[in-house]
Length: 408
Image (tube, rainbow, N blue to C red; front, side):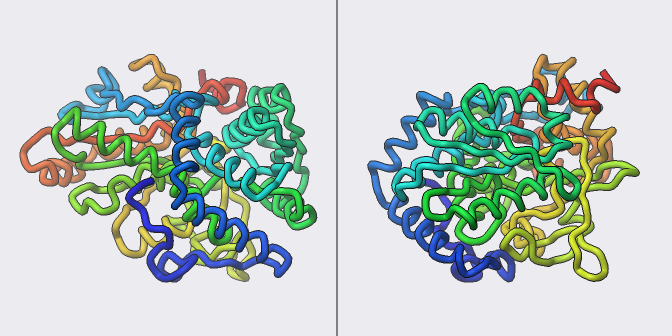
């Protein structure tokens, strides 16, 4: 199915010291059933064939690897900059890759009801879409703040028959929506499957979601070899929970010549969501990983102009990649991401999601630094450096948000 292993380094459910299953006893039978079903599905050619058919004919895979015409030049030129166009998937983002895989697992487990959390609404839309396709009941939890700034996606979910439950506790964003979805799941485990939208949560979710998103990296690897005759020098993706980043990284983690950069939300004076850059290890939503917390270990609110990055934690595999040095993580501010949103729209005719705009802004920042350019040039060995940015989603959803309305 892909180049990843069933179980990550560090033993079952662990990426080094990160990951694990920090959950109530009532959830352990469900997690064990999910793991058994997933492992069996991985070895079942019929499962791979059905998922492959859905990804090709329903979602529209493979997505293109597009070489930018003007954006790369506007960043100073001298590089060959590609976009992996996950925004062209049905539903408008990479989220559908994981949802279709988990929907098939839910059917194998006999679950007739699906719950999910969503921040930017893209995972919620993908889940509502797949439930409509398969005739399953769907409940999506979404923070009240996110419902206001992602109103078009709320309408799309309802149109496809999903119940969207507003979460009014806490900061009323993604973390709180995740907590409510887990509470629902704990209460209704007999007939309900929880489709987590990112590489977070207790084992087996981080590895399972990575496996379903690894199609991004495997496609990108084959496509860049076809276009350039060699591997890229740098792969860049935004990181909230981290599913789109792990998905494209999975195609290149075994290639030591390829640098992997994850970009977190540096936010503004209102705060940030840079768990890897500025957080400390702790437990959130069933897993041990880097997260934002105070001196007493209490999780503190995150902030980002991009609802999909507005989360105080991160997937445990990213924590392992950070500690081992295999991937590098940095951040850009709300203002830098917003500028990249406008730049790609005006220079390429492609409206990126605010989440993906963070990765674009990082490339611009990197190429403006002479020392970073020298590093890239050395990595490329005299050739023009090849860079791939994972364009994880499209930005139509962000047009109604106050972040865009105030700056367009």
